[in-house]
Length: 398
Ligand SMILES: *Cc1c(COP(=O)(O)O)cnc(C)c1O
Image (cartoon, rainbow, N blue to C red; front, side):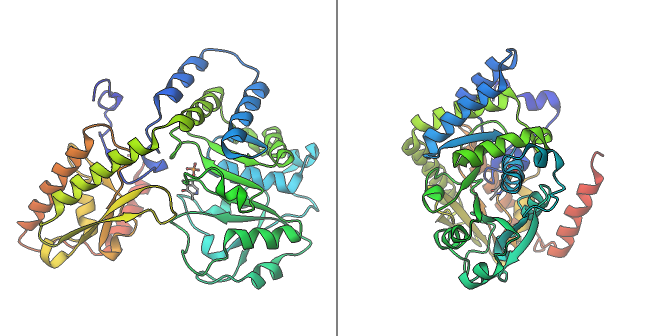
């Protein structure tokens, strides 16, 4: 690609078929947002007014009364919890994370206590929230939620994600009804969801999105919800929100990304993604020990992925070793491998620059054929792989 800054910086030219991963730079920021970021960086603005504009745009797209932009999704969850705890009390806002005698218990289903790179419950605690798990990992019941609500309960967090346990959980509508009956605010994590209206319709008081995932904006968190609640989130910039604030470029970029979302050619994008999936499937079909299947997104985003099953006996390599092999070399291809221990990984088509789908296809053939010639089955014990990954983190910055 022309003008690729990565070569200049000595960074590997990774191709992202893993999804909108924050750890890989999230998504391809669209041209409208890039231009808005560029144009505002050199200008002075009154930040309250810029936030007002963002609020209007977010409200228009989500159907909420108001909206707010912060540094990341994770920041949004801390600030939403903070707002539930402090309300509009400016002194309480300055005193966080010390909550004094205020209500600060925050309910979350145990099956929703996941890590998105950091634990969701830590984002709650950061704001002074006391986390109260509801139910067990694979089963949560309405009576458990109702029984967990006390005079100390201030909010409840509901996570929508492929990371959460996908059965035995309380659906959002029921969850919100039980909470609202007792005056408990419902905060929904929809970081990686396309649907900008459904969760508010299902009862969220505030719904949170990552601006830098499907929306294709700069790194940011977007909050949408009831006006006074959003105002109370905004006020946190006078407290713990200061360190989580977004700059003018982030706000202008989010506004532009949302405007672009309104007119985005979703069908055209879907068709291009489909073509990439079919290319990869056709490329892999007939390779010994490899079974490619197109599967829908687990949280109902309008997105399919290619699930690539790897039979180590036939393919001479495990799914996770194949994922690692693809990530090496001059054209590293980063696949979606969080379930590789089940013997498959995914190829996600939603972050490709034109032409990259062919590079991915060529790399698949290259690595699958290399493995097929191996004398021994390539099989790194999983425990060893995980320990090596942990050790590698501690090596930074070397
Ligand atoms: C990506 C993601 C997050 C984290 O978002 P950041 O903007 O990277 O902080 C949280 N929850 C879910 C469900 C996610 O997909």
